Length: 162
Image (cartoon, rainbow, N blue to C red; front, side):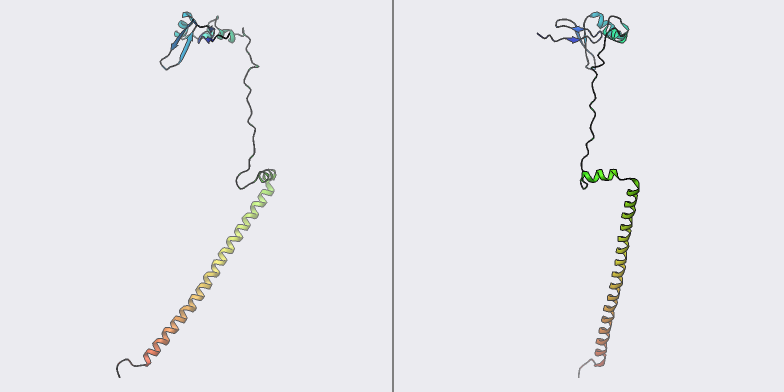
């Protein structure tokens, strides 16, 4: 049969059912005290490590064997590599293995390609502007010639009634 026991907040001794007192502090914390002696020491704010009959003093002065082997083992998080959207896992691994020289060379080559592309775009825009301007000029000349011809025909005939 298992009996539920609490630990005394001061002495850390076991409190069996029907023994001890509970104290609720103003901030809502619960304290369990085995007897009046523990309660009085705690009320006087005396450290339990200074009183020889407490478990805390025995632990501090190495009278009790503490379970150091029972410390919690930390589980180390394993780093898992995952693919990023747009780049596969193999591509990420390949890029990690590259050295700095190859990365610099690739970056310079990419920069050159971008420069060349921009230069071509600028040249295309300039040539289109020149082509548009020459065609616009030709259209304007044709319009002016047609207007002059129409004016010449209208000037040759007298306006008015016969």
